[in-house]
Image (cartoon, rainbow, N blue to C red; front, side, top):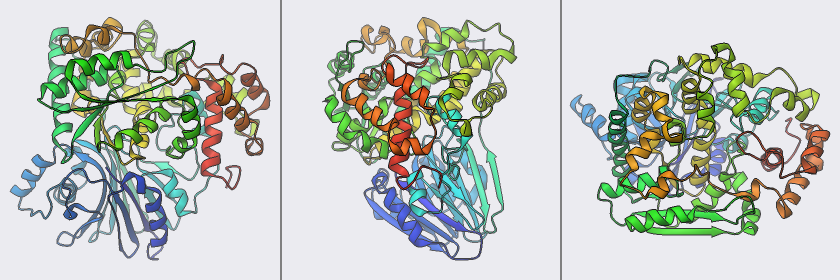
Length: 600
């Protein structure tokens, strides 16, 4: 719901409203319904609105409350805003709008930085306190909504996308060598605060950042899973019942808190199919569902229609099914890359982009199944890691990397040129993050790491970017923080029963066809980006052999040639295509830094 941006000057000069306008132009697709800006001397704010809650002009942004001396730009949805509003009215606050945006303003005034802990939902916002001359930036617990920033000695700028910050100019576009290591080790995941560009950083999930007008900064993590341990006192049946109650509540909130219809992205997998079943259970009639499929290859089917069709038949949804030929994928690929706030290797990014275009013609809000696999243990590598439970903690990172990393450090050193080489940045980071989870078993530590860190910059960012590129809001009930806290208390051994996601599978019995529940784990398939041949190979070969790529000097030519010699044979441990990784990064850099080799 929307795009945000702003600038705070530290040098006493007025905010550069031209830069704010340029940033707003870049985030226009996130909010096609209204645009506005506001300034207060050294502070400038910009906003593009997607109208979902309180469709009236009273909810336009930037929202200014002269009585309290506050101004706000906000992207997201607060699912408990009505309850918070009642609490605030009881405290004597008066409201001039009916939506969730004004609730954040009043919540800041009432509870200060503690307001974040009271917000139940997805959010990124910038709030200016005129009296204290303080800018407060905050991001939701799982980073569902993006918040990027860039800073020098004169100012800080923030925005919903990297492209907005680049449009404002003055950004150091040199490649961050630590981020580059993460990118090629963790299938394009670069944990906050880094991004691939030296001059662009992002606020970490569950954090807030407070800046005074003189540049003084405080940052704080307001929520964590670290203090939550497994509860062995409940039976598997108890966990299924508790999961059902929490998930139903999460789905209900995301359906009710909207003044427009809500649909479902139906992949045909267990997670999205379960959302359809639970919405039908709530009495949701005329539910819109959407599926997309692509061309098959000899190795892999390009759609999961055989499963989504079963769900549609059972619940009688108003279904929209799209089949996209490879020629269309190839033609639209640059557009999808332009929608990426950071490079994304997941082959389904393009799928979500093309699906989002079709869905946005029918509806403004959808529920999506992202997060279920990470929260409930649905991926094939979790049981492999569970088998290593007797390992000493000092071996956790090494074991995890053998099952998960795209490239070991030795291979990474063969990939990048010596100027970009260095220590095993990713191994060091992951070892520290696993240790900080507070878990006593490796698989539990990995599940926590996944949901708190890795998921943010893979499926979550992908879905937000690709849907918001079409003014479509995607809501993710499996990342409801109360549901995640509950799942974290559920012992990993229970979550991993029946190959993973046992509580969800048991909950789905009787609600979904057994064939949907018991099918092998599927992935949003786009075989042409996994088994690279024909025109797709030509595109990737041209990218990695281009003059721009050679001048950029990131890749060692021997490694590139090795991949080109057998392009559909070099896959990562989690089944990504290694040539696609190299080509995608180069394409993203060419699209976003067209004037030079990325060392600006």
